[in-house]
Length: 585
Image (tube, rainbow, N blue to C red; front, side, top):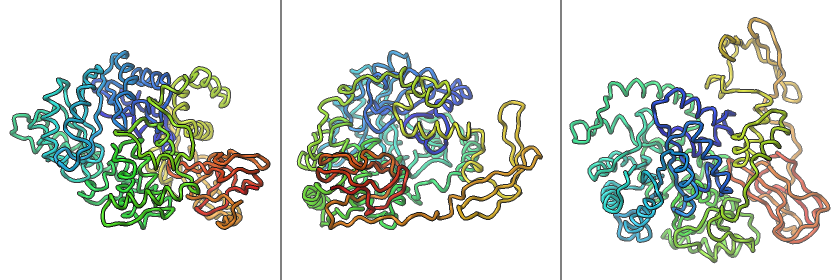
């Protein structure tokens, strides 16, 4: 059962205010006879950049101890060198190392010559030589068409003795057909989801596959009569999370064009909405395909896919895309426009990091003209990114965090902070304010109580709180409401700020594009870091402000050397594109 890792790690902290390590231990305790599998991004661990080797090794050690049995290891650019530290460490823990090939292109199309059968066969042989126990074909977007699935599995079985595990998303609707072709060629394992959670950007349906293989020599032995109650349960649970779904109503073969990974699709749409571009969703998908060509046609899986998505949104928000009759021509014209306008642009952090080499080296290298334009002289990372990073003193970090919070934090807390310092800081702050919110049921956590509703909250065995909401007062001039409730029969009140009410704030100052002293925000977001203060002398390219919106970070830099006369927004302030951020003299 794949139950951990990948995006589930930071989203547990970020959106649920829960500890992913506690979740893993609870799952292992509840299902001790099931192998628990996690998704490990090689040198990126469960993050979006490369980390020191000792951090990745410590993460693997703790994950193995907490209950992970199978580590599915991949690199977003298929760079085996960036996976070797993870593979070796998993092997030393005695756990299962399943090493993945990230599938892209189309091996059945002779015109797609970059990612051929020979490319994948060579990578598979090197993965076997690394000591892996399993070989995974990780098809993040569901690009593996049925005929291509047969060709690929047949070829890989010819060159490796490793068991082959096929992972697909079902955005195109062809997932079951591809699985059946792969099964005919002897694939050993396929990934599926229970029927009520399957299809579209998820995995193909387990219930459908069981039915399709009925009477086949490789029949599963599972019975839909026993699977259906599980599907029914998750169908009910899914209703609670409906507002967070991807918005995709039906399967679409358009995925073969834009190649957006299934796991990213549900993140990209809210990110686009946050940027005010939801009305241009179709343009965003076109821009995603355009950026893929711009950066050289790369495997797109976290974190490389995040970079492509950030870049696509950036292009649209700044009106940098150029339309043409073909995708290749549009990419060439857009590249030219980007290079010409690069001096005035603040590229997203993920894009700058990619071109610096922080994710490793893409197949066939970088487009060097675009790379130079994006980096503007910033230093480049050559070779394996983690090799140039000094070890991090996790013991010192643990002591520092414990002193800062006033609580005895653990080694896994220090590891989480090393991976996600800002996210972990926010989680620890909320934990100190609200304590463990995982004891709340899902509807009340997301949507709150209705007046007259009563809920029971189990704090611990034998200790239950009965809470009933009596009334909610009108907001005062500062937007604060008085909430009346009963706690175990005793009347209580609490004052709560109503975040749905528009706060009265000072009008945002707009930058004057004609004024060379003004530094403007190119994207909307929240100020998460201020790098300069009034009076500071800065060089051209020095960081001034960092903005963040839905995991997309942008460092706004000084367009020229000068003295900072003013920094306009405060930390945690919201800004829109065109807002004045700083004034240089």
